[in-house]
Image 1: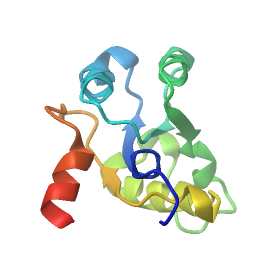
Image 2: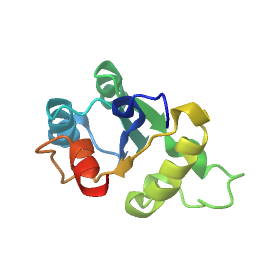
Image 3: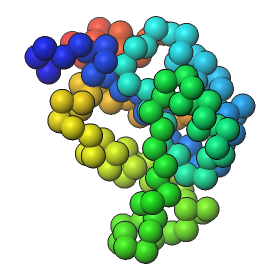
Length: 132
């Protein structure tokens, strides 16, 4: 993406279902501390308002994916209370990224498990060193 700051055009995306902020704070805190300056996105189903508010306060983009389980959606028919986040997250990520302007499309999209990952260093640096 010529002319676009790669720090901003990279994205880390996590998806959560029914988790409270305390449960995802190691992931959030480590991403905040590792030096990553790109888009930080959390797509959620059944997240409480306090969790979403804290993510928003920290500068994360938050998207509620419950709307993708509506009666008119023929792909995701299950009730969002029973959504299988480990499977549906790939559809969620595609959907929300496809809704953004082309200029905002990330160079790298890193879909990272929120429940059991912490960042030890900036993931963008690893990608640039390993992939070029």
